[in-house]
Image (cartoon, rainbow, N blue to C red):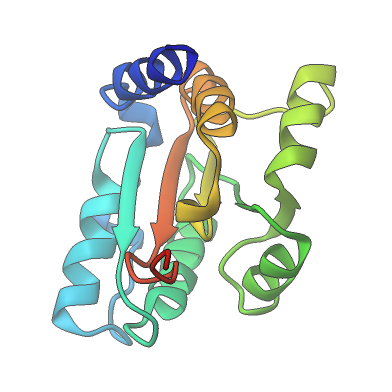
Amino acid sequence: APIIAEEAAIVALMGASNPAAALPATVIDTEDLSAEQARAITAIATSPWLVQPLSAPAGAGKTTSLRVLREAVARSAGHDRVLVLAPTGRAVDVAVQEAAGDTGRTIDSALIRLRRGSLQLDARTLIVVDEAGMVGTPQWRALLAATAAAGAKTVLVGDAHQLAPVR
């Protein structure tokens, strides 16, 4: 039952909101996005809800959409950085190289730094979790508890088809 308790804690965190984490629509430049991408990024950016999913298959433009979101954060007076987290260093490096975030860390590194107090989060920080489907339940609970307590928006990025079926 410990895993069920972890999952219940995660579900409870899904309802967290903070109006200060919402970006104004005026800072979002969706010119390079499709209509569907523009709707998704605008909804994520302007929402006060702190946990936001962005799920799409490979090639659907998630990286381009995240670049637009990062640029919107840079233009917003109330926000100052996008932190990319991912399960592996390789995924972090790729996301930062593709300009999905300003800086990046593995989730394990971020959790250690949060516990030590050497990583600070607040409503001015937007967190992008790449390869979200690869994150374990205990890590999710710890990460979302920290981001929600800080009032920081967390965008969970993934692809429902990322994992191959078990045979």
